[in-house]
Length: 202
Image 1 (spheres, rainbow, N blue to C red):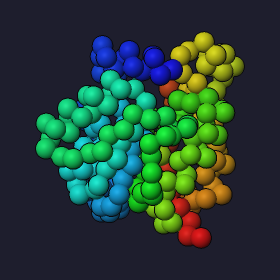
Image 2: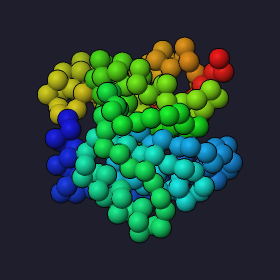
Image 3: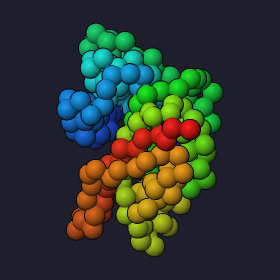
């Protein structure tokens, strides 16, 4: 999977690149998310990270594809903002340290296979301090049989979270609000969801 994304970022920009995601923009500009220490999980070309830095956040951004991080650094320099970009693996991070007030994941967790999702949750949840917020955007639907078979052939581990999977994985540590999404779409992909999760106080 790492080689697949590294090659993609080297030769082109994936369709999710080019602008910060609308749900994040709305939450920040409305004041629902306050500036603090932010961690962009699977940052790609850095559009969300740059946006957060422009709005007063101290941002660390992580991706496992060096080509993506190189593009992200160029975007941050062009925007005149400072972001701490890291090449690291979110299932077994080696460089990430400390705790953050805001974690943002746009389409990283749902790309992972089941065991990698387990590793991701174990590694990432402790990076959010008490009362921290976690914005999770994911594709979400029950995979059909052919889709489950396809994940064995594709260069990435997953296509979508199952309905209820976010609650199962994060419910023990977070209060969870599903604030946006669509289900049973007639075209593919067949659904998506955006969650804003708050880490419970000890």
